[in-house]
Length: 187
Image (cartoon, rainbow, N blue to C red; front, side, top):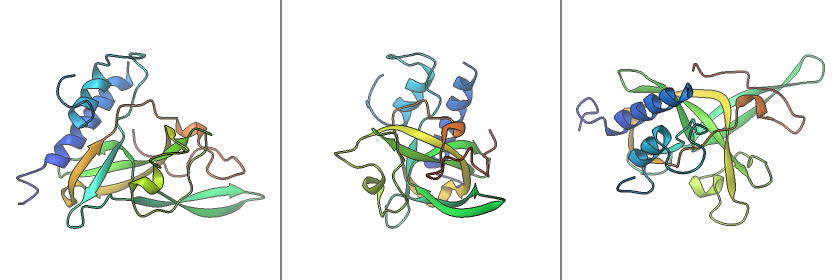
């Protein structure tokens, strides 16, 4: 079926973007899912009412039905005018904007574990980034690094519960600390 006629992933991501924009200034059915996550972001029933600003989500590719892992390269300044480039990869995203043609700008979100660390790059599936047991994920870190994707190329989306993502200013890209990302998403 042509994406122009059946844009369920695109429409869902556009709704997430609209909901995130709505809460930026200020349950029925499934307990976990995109519709419930959007409703919870806009009208939270538990916890602080204005703290969540993000609906993290995972996209699944057509054909192999595997999680899409977004990848990019970030420059890490160090020393005297020197730069090291590192790969960043994650299967978890925050939408920045959706265009009418179903192209979307997605920010890479890094999982943050109980110890306050982001797991290293590398993995074949979602559970490599978010372990099922052990060192649980407690937060998601905004990176300011965006990729542009064609939402028509995905067959499914899984939304996580709304969160207040850690700001880009708190991201330490390397062991030496570092500030915000060198490439920023348009918000």
